[in-house]
Image (cartoon, rainbow, N blue to C red; front, side, top):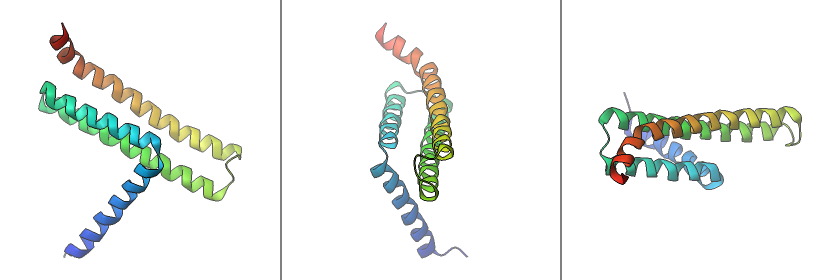
Length: 122
C-alpha cells in the first residue's frame, strides 16, 4: 500500500535535489529559462499537441542530463582532485552529452517554431 506520508517525503527530497542543482549550477538555470521560453512560445504560437509533447520531452531530457552531469561532477570530485586527467575527461564527456542534447533540442525547436515565427513576421 502506498503511504501518502512516504510519497510526500520522496517528492520533497526530489524537489530539494532540483533546488540544489538550480542554486548551484548556472547552466541549469539558463536551461530552465530556455525551457520556460519554449513553453511560452508553444502557448503563444498555439503549436500542435504533438509538437508540444516533443518540446516537453526535449526539455525533460536536457534538464535531466544536466542533473546527471552535476551528479557526475560532484561524485568524481569527491574521489579525485579536480586536476586528475580522468576526472577532467569524465566531466568533459558528461558536459559533451548535455551539449549534444541541447544543440539537438535547439535544432528541433527551430524546425518546430520556424513556420510559426515566419508566418508572424513575414
